[in-house]
Length: 283
Ligand SMILES: C[S@@+](CC[C@H](N)C(=O)[O-])C[C@H]1O[C@@H](n2cnc3c(N)ncnc32)[C@H](O)[C@@H]1O
Image (cartoon, rainbow, N blue to C red; front, side, top):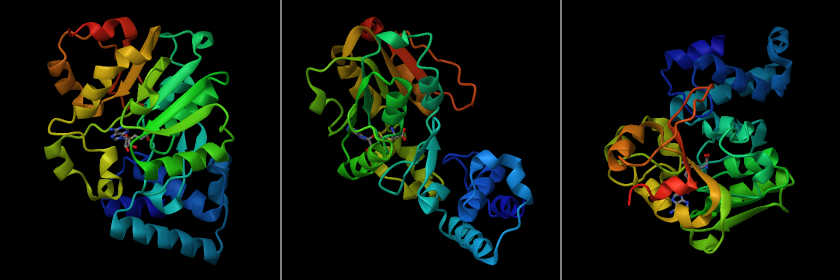
């Protein structure tokens, strides 16, 4: 509670895996004390050694003074039940798409028909690796234009033993997968507009700009995905894209597209889904 109070009083920005002081304090303390989150509230009665208390104090100090997202200090992040390594080469995974992956994109696609999945802009590999875990028979391609991000993604791929079914490819959107077709194309692309980039809290400046900035209105990446997704999807395939708060701009830019907005119980939202055959609706 003391750590949570200090985070709150320092007015740090939450939004890199947790959205409140209490949850972030719990992760900070559990990490520094080497405790498993599975212990839950039972861990709260434990007494901390001086060394562990000093570790917590050091994390807290850097988190507050330098506004570094906690995941970059601990080098760990949790996504769809997976523990991932992260550092400043990749965005801290936090996409609400995790929930859809865990539901195996039901009811929009039949899981047994899913053989190939593409994750566009994979960053740490979070979505691609979660998909490979949720669909144990599917092959997954994960692309990113950032070679540095792919180093992190490959490290996570090795940790999870997913080298056989997941390909990590350096690619400007779809360039490295020309001619390939998928049952699911999923993406959490950059979607922050120019004015919004300037106004972001300090925490976001530790994240790669490539992971956030998407032109004047924040829709550059979505436009690039729309332009190519149709020819990379199988007939019954689906496209799933996070657009966050650019949802309204998107609807204005593509008024005829029949977007589906799945409900996300864990909160977050701003994720649309589109069937392959509907991708031509704008033409
Ligand atoms: C918002 S981050 C998402 C990372 C990861 N998918 C996640 O959800 O945590 C967007 C990612 O898209 C990548 N990216 C940006 N432009 C790209 C492009 N032209 N082609 C492929 N990937 C791109 C960035 O390097 C970054 O890793």
